[in-house]
Image (cartoon, rainbow, N blue to C red):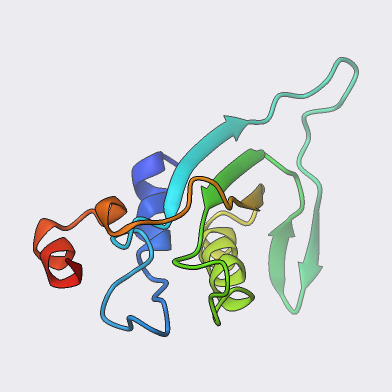
Length: 125
């Protein structure tokens, strides 16, 4: 099962094109991460479903959900399409058996105070 720290490591590979040296986690764009393990419902078989795709065994069983709440630096962010998709995909690649849900949150709006690195925060002030 993934941990919050592992999910954060995935998210740290995504960079805002307007601030290409700073990942979106450090920028404070991620508000929350929830990891919800899946539990079979009554009568549901717990067997893994799989199929072969070009000689690779692919497991299609969903093991749970990873829910990420994030925001953008501004409501008119030019990377509004790219960033949420890149964040979701960075996690989905590492955890293909989890449903990754990314919620784009508009409130509270992002501020410089949300930056996680104090030195970086000083550059914006």
